Image (cartoon, rainbow, N blue to C red; front, top):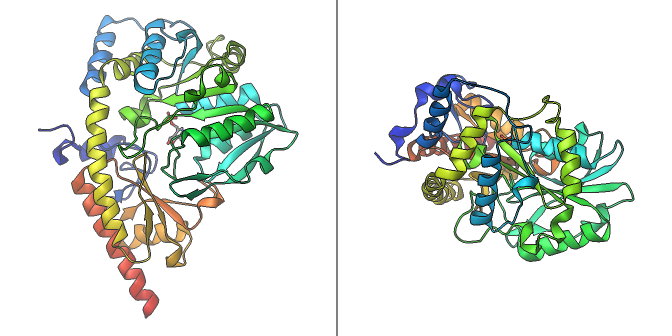
Length: 397
Ligand SMILES: Cc1ncc(COP(=O)(O)O)c(C=O)c1O
């Protein structure tokens, strides 16, 4: 059986274990194409590495900065996969990308400081800023000609601005930045002395038409003002293990982040077994990521074709990520009302746009995850199609 065959999705286990709007939380019979979390089990090498560690029988304290071998493996993967030159000494393993974002915001913002947050974007940008006592200034992110139009970004900057949040690739818009975009963002951050929170959690899930360009393409020296975040949930499907990291090229900013992470007091940090899993991911499992990506591309192309044929929906073709971002304004409904309708009438759960998850700039949109089998995706899209046709009929009546 191939890795991403339909039979490899274990619904019996998912219904017990997959939370966060997924199988364990939806009513029986409902299909969740919701949180960005694969329906496939993780690569077997991960469980094998964990089993071996567990058999050793000791679960002692770990080095406060994380296992040196894990930090080296992350540095090697960043170099090999993305061309990023990062010193392992400036990589801090943490218990999730979400945590790394909170740490980065706390390291940079004083109460009342401002952070530029794109609208829409994943809610963790806003939440990490607010948790640090900061204030968000929203930049309306609109896609034009396949990338985010940065016109007007400079007008968001005030004397209190200290940080800019960069989600590359972008969730939920599914777009990549070009090197010219990076240059523009960096030039502004240099002009106003801003730190960049650079979230690359989606950087492995990129389709062949357009390359992923990291901000590090501008050179390590210019990236001293960047605090980067990576997480293992999206590429490797291990969200529940909470594995992520923060990295930098500036020792001063990095040291501040370490201080804020509370790893030195042991109040913060990542469990030994989760580091073992993370190390197996980067050392042994990129073959799995590449095979997953092929499966995802086929799902993306199929799903996009289907969505384009449905009345009242305007999907965007994702350049990256495993979610469709779909304009539903022709339904005349809010994201919440539309997703409630689908849940009630056709037993399909998807994520509404709007303030809660991505910011008010995502109102009139929904997000649909396709990190599942072709059979489940097909059934989910059949239900969506039935739902929109029902809506169209009810509107006519
Ligand atoms: C852009 C972005 N950043 C961070 C996260 C959080 O990832 P983690 O599960 O590693 O905390 C997500 C999860 O959806 C995300 O989409």
